[in-house]
Length: 544
Picture 1: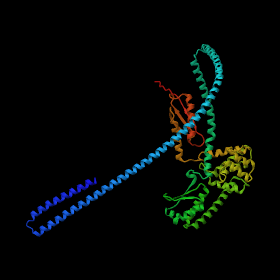
Picture 2 (picture 1 turned 90 degrees about the vertical axis):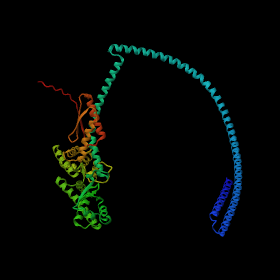
Picture 3 (picture 1 turned 90 degrees about the horizontal axis):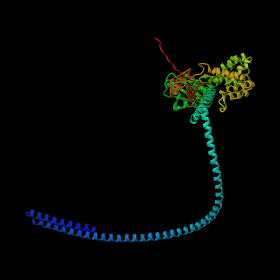
Picture 4 (picture 1 turned 30 degrees about the vertical axis):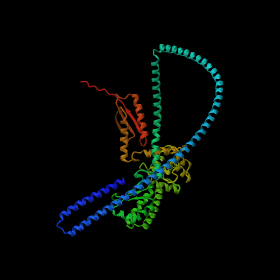
């Protein structure tokens, strides 16, 4: 290829020379009028160009020949290397095949040895099978005889069964299929009735106890340990006159608010809410301390870390004194004497506890007064009853021992501070955690329920209340045959009206139980919900 390029280049050069000569000749014709000296110079230049072209062509020819010789030498070397590599690979492949052959040969010999051993074992097994075959043959003949006897017995039994069935059909006037269906229907109806009665009994008992207790346990757990709860149980809103005070409360680089949170152990939320600061904590006493401290700091106007610690310490002491004073005042109002100072402090602390929105101290006072009245009517000691009623929820106040129910914790506290055994038992038994050992225990239990059940004593969020009523009605409407539903008595009763043509009397009982079961499984509610299914047929005619 390079030779071809070289020849092509020489030809191009020759053509160029010829073209140059032609041009030169034309120049000579056109420049005949020029001087002889210019003609001589042109001739010399033309000769120099021609000589240079010949020299270039000779050099390129030599270069092309040299490159061609080098390429041939490299080709011969490459072919020699390929041949040597092929020989090496061939030898390696041959050696590998020979080693594989030896390995396969050895493996075949081992397999042959194993095969001979297996043949010997098979020979022994064959003899053993032959021996056992005789025994099995004897057993098979015995079984065949027993099977023939069994078949004969089955035929005899079938004949007797057919005869008895024929006689029963004659006596009853029904064939076998009709009798079987009649029996199945009667047994099914009987089982449904018994199951329905049993379900109704269990459901009614569960409704009376489970829902209210579960609700109380949930609220009590929320108040005694730091778990997520509703806003009204964990938040206090501190109102301010203008939003400029927020910057002073926060302080430079947040030093004031950090000092306030550290001193009160309350999270202070300062956001875009106009004229309000949110105090968040599970302990209402700490929230009250933070609220009063903020109030004094804002009124004073001096807000800095040292002043904050001073005011919080003063307010904490003030709240503690107020708690003790509240406890003493409560005992004086109820005419109770000789109570341990720690119990007095816990009673005062009830002022800052609530259950279902009902203040715990007010609830305990109501229970105490009710217990006194009931004990007087029954001829018991009203002072003891009043004392037990006041202390029945004392276990809701302490923050320690959260693993105990509040009734047991209250009984433990009463025993610790030397209260009488019958009072301790009444406190511990008012939710049936322990056995009732005195007449004061059922009195406290009844009065506790009366105080909590008073209309307006306990509240719930309006939105949640409305949603619960709507959920009750929609749940009942999801069943086929239901025409209308009405949630009445503050959600404690659900009236379900069904179509008379689509539902029979037996289905109404099943429908009420199914709705009650779904309400128990899917909804949260206080107390119990009564489900009433109404089915009626009215025929109206007008005489004219």
